[in-house]
Structures are given as C-alpha cells and as structure tokens.
Image (cartoon, rainbow, N blue to C red; front, side):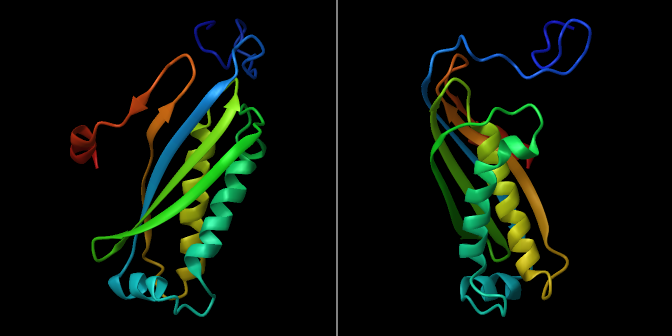
Length: 165
C-alpha cells in the first residue's frame, strides 16, 4: 500500500509529510454550476429574493469555506491562504456558474480549498433560494486549473470537458 500517499504500509491513514517540500506559489481554480428555473435565476440576478443578496452571501460562504478546508477534509493541511476569490456568471437561461481562485505560498497545493469554496458557495445559493425553487441542482464541481508544485501545471481540456458534462 506504500504507493498510496495517505496510507502507511499497514494501511493506516496518515497526513502526508510535506516538510521536505519547497514552498512555492500555488494557485487553484475550480468551478461549479447551479441549475435552476429561469425565474429563480432572475430573482438572484436582480437581488429580489427576500433573504437578501444571494451572491454576496454565497461569496462570503465560499471564502470562509476555503479557509476552513482542513477542518472539513480530514487529511488536508492547514494552509496560510494569501487570496480567495469567488466569482459568479449567469450562463444560459437557467445556470449560475461559480468559480473560485485560491492562492498560497506553501509546500502543498490549494485544489481542495478551491473545490470546497465553490461547493459551499453553491450550497449557499441553494439554501437562500430553496423557498422559491427546491428543484435546483448543483452540478459539475471540478478543478479547472492548478499551478505550482512538483506535479506542475494542469488545465482542464475544454474539448474533453464538453463531452463529459
């Protein structure tokens, strides 16, 4: 089992020792989509939901979630994040796209922080709008790009992504 980094030779879980790795600038970008009825999307866009500005609450939730990733995912390292950005785009007549970009200067990457940010932002959108649309779905939570570290640069192939959506 030694080829699995989060397990020791006896199969016990462990946190990977990153002490010997070099600190580098690392960036990860993740996205998610919340699909909903067009009327719901318009209410969110026009800031007309009774609970308030859905996007700003979701943005704060995503930022806070990125900072708490190590508390949520057992083997993640606590990281001194240098930046978390959560952005929204209205795509199609029924989709809200959420994108998070997380940066750090550290010994390990921030992919999980970016994925956690978009996940919690999407859940927050659902929570704030569920009174008008319980049929919303959260879709395509995925890593889009990451830089830094030993494994190098990853960018999701947009052509391959379209066929797997």
